[in-house]
Length: 65
Image (cartoon, rainbow, N blue to C red; front, side, top):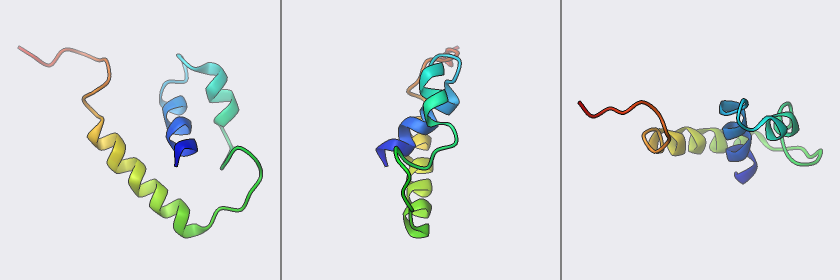
């Protein structure tokens, strides 16, 4: 799970984290390993929930009038 979180963050912020983006792009895990379908599916769902909950925590435009 931690691998996928950092991988997703490095993909979304590739201009700020170019070394991380290059390392994590195209990999399923740190080293070659077979990851089961259920693990991939649950991790994908949890990532969507986590990033949905974090959507307003990052820097961005000010939303106050």
